[in-house]
Length: 189
Image 1: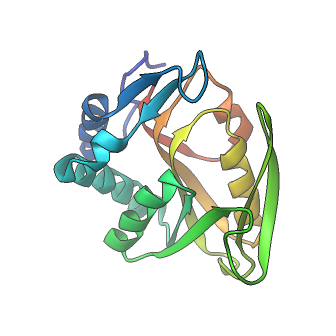
Image 2 (image 1 turned 30 degrees about the vertical axis):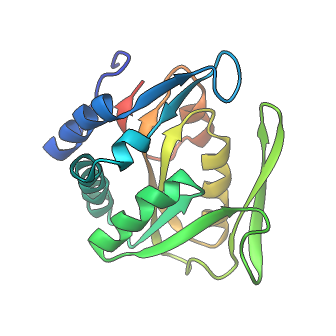
């Protein structure tokens, strides 16, 4: 078990470097979006091409190791991470969007939030059956969005090979909610 802010047992030295980068490029914003919440702001990471490149390299290593042929990014911050990973490894990219943002036939999944429900969608033909998909997002917290995204992808017949995230908030139940999916956080908080 790792302590707060420690790197998770890593699959490569690149991931260790990414954990170090994240520690110095993630800003805590207290009491946002509501009192008692500490928001993990990734804009300092995005503003540093070198730091961002290290993180994308770590995600690309994970995708290669897991044999991913498609990268799926969850709106909105997951898009920022998934697109360059897909480009770097020569994989397809699938956007998982908030309801009503995609044209044409879609598949949708609704999940519970602490204050209501939300719905995400993918194109009905987004992922061919048997495609090896790595799901990418910024934070694994309660796991609702990741579980819904996983369900959408498997509903298309995809083989979801893992969930790669910048950070996993270990004090929240996200991991249990998406089990038995292989979860690869670059940093455990």
